[in-house]
Length: 84
Image (cartoon, rainbow, N blue to C red; front, side):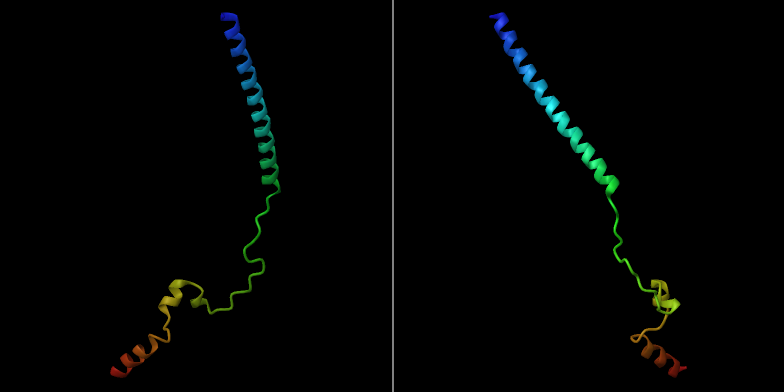
């Protein structure tokens, strides 16, 4: 009985070892594939040909646009100037 039990244990261990080795091979292969893919990866530009920004300098930044008068604030400014 004792010898028979050890035989079963040894067989299971052998199967587990074979499974572990197979999984390790798959994992190694996947790692090689991922490393190769990383080396080949190329980051594409979102906008390959950006046109020159031809806006006036003050309109190129949010702060500049905020400081300049707009069509909505222009009548208010003109009304303020007429009062003075």
